[in-house]
Length: 207
Image (tube, rainbow, N blue to C red; front, side):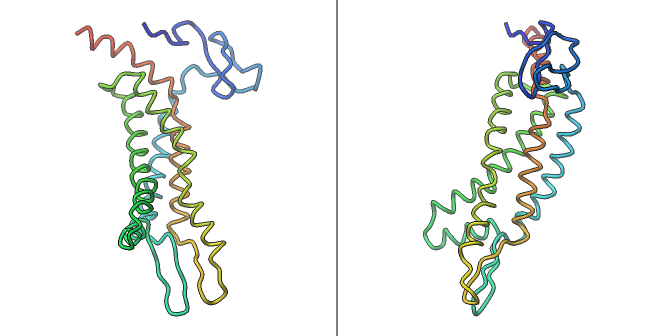
């Protein structure tokens, strides 16, 4: 039988994770305000999630890199750059770019939306499994800036006077903002709400 801290009359600090009896106002260790469940967190999640979606659209439409040579300027979008790499035989690099820049962000959007909806309307997946999804989204978030790092490195290294240069495109900023917004959406989600659905799951199994 799964027992939550709330069932035992306890509340944990989300900053330093120290546990106190229910009713304690502030954490004695870090001074953070103690709340057993932040029901307003879902409003924050959806606000950051929508902002992330709005930033993700131009990140895939506008160029990520602008390569300037003596004769022409070449603009490359995320998907266009991956396709071009694949045409040169660099399938491994192309797949990494597509997975890191297209597939993983899309899965993060889906996972965050699923977790938020499951808290509000219930879900067939068990609470422990949904908590694993939350932990995975949190872990992936710190590695989501890999594209922006690559653009920054290329821009600093390939600056050969007037012969050739690489500069970040408009999509680089949009992609960075999208990553930040999705990270904020995940951080805003109160994962303790997942465990409040356990009674509903038990009732559903009993029926």
